[in-house]
Length: 255
Length: 255
DNA sequence: GGAACTTCTGAGGAAGCTCTGAACAGCGGC
DNA sequence: GCCGCTGTTCAGAGCTTCCTCAGAAGTTCC
Image (tube, rainbow over all chains, first blue to last red; front, side):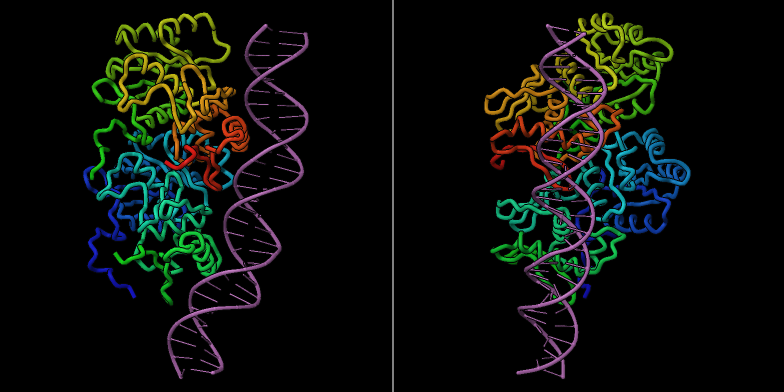
């Protein structure tokens, strides 16, 4: 049952306070990928963050679009039909010198020409990626670029006595350090970014696993069980099953 | 609580307090190199320090740009298409007598003329250089030229009982001297300038190794292992692997 | 011109991570 | 109480990531 969809105050997003520009207007992002399906999925996920999104399918229209939109960040496929992402990067910087860029690249292309990218503060993600990863990286870039937060949502996620420091990749509960594998970490991040909200296995699969993952929802159950062993171990449980609907994380008492 | 994102001097900062001019405005740097790719990477890295950066591709436009920007420092390639860096230096000094200059020069370049330069308080770096080196040298120049620090981040880096004196190139842990090779030193400096933050191998490669390094991320692992043998030897480890993400340095206890 | 040091490559192996399949447990319906 | 369905957990295979060693090539310094 979808309950609180109507009454929660939100521009178009997920109900959380959005990362915004200093003047309070939505962050503006340009997505550049020649695969329309992928561009669609990506821009959907970014709009869900409350951001203003436009897309482009090649380098030329990317630069043209950027000139008009003056985006705060660009998600940029390295392989484009007309040119490669690096030339686009340079053009983008002439259009807007302080723009952040998140590159999308094939795994085996990483070593070749990605070099130098992260030096300027930009970042990249290898295909196939998960949406959570893209969003998290983008949020990191934007935060470092000085995008203010509407409310005081720092670089740490807090749910009850459970705390996640995204930069240090550190999770503690009651001050006690919890070690997590990459997938466990991302799953927990997704849960913690949506506290008190029931997330279906399909949603989790779509966000946390990469878009080309063919497996079944069973992995979600498995990883939830891993998480419980580490996060809830011996303590009052915070991760709850909602039979037939999904999973939810919330602070213990009720609060 | 609204954070001080507006008034801290950084267009796309790294989260650390930036070196600023005495009046609190960002340090202004002019990058002069005829290779646009290199100029791009350099200016990106310097912007990441929170500094205001402009670029020029030859001597004439460098002087013109300097007249307008009145930069605190100039990163100046010795070999330029229209003239050499030494002439530009003289012109720069007529524009702004107290400007700091960091020369970029080929390894086999004329030693004596360079030596004359450094006597005047300026400095140089040989190509191919690492970005960490350029930034560190520039910071040294600026510090000596009286640029204030937002917070008092001196020429020593401290993480737990590990102390690095950048000027003396000396590292101690628990008072005990640790001898490091040049690359080891630079890698440790990069880690120590980003304590508690997970750094990916790509980031490390981009910052610590020179921009033309074609090698793989494997060297990073190798040098981390060297560092561990020297820094963590027998003690409680400070350098940690975050599987699938990178490496992080932090003080032993926790906080 | 040689010794000491530094840097990097390659290989082997250890450790950790992810996912599959299957058995098991608990809930709810009848 | 029995059965089916949903969710949980275990065990292990296959894979990826990371660590370390040994040695070759290059550099620096005497």
